[in-house]
Length: 73
Image (cartoon, rainbow, N blue to C red; front, side):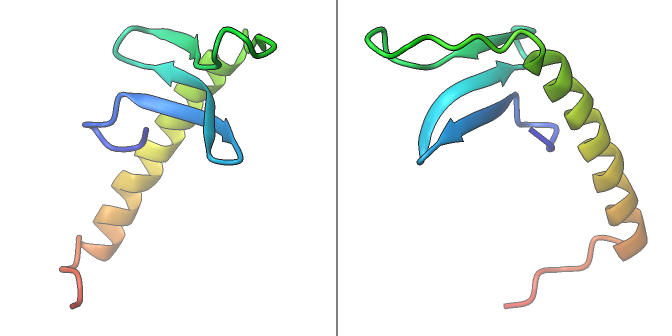
């Protein structure tokens, strides 16, 4: 969830999505099927919001430092 267009931050295990922070809705969402043990992640949404802020700050610094060079082919 580091770009301006990304609206989620996902946590998973073995390639399966377990939980994600939906920044557009402002909440954390458990993505496990009903038959799985439901896990609670009460503090993860706040952590995801904080991590997104750090990531965006770092991204802005990197873009400025590298002046957004073109991708090499």
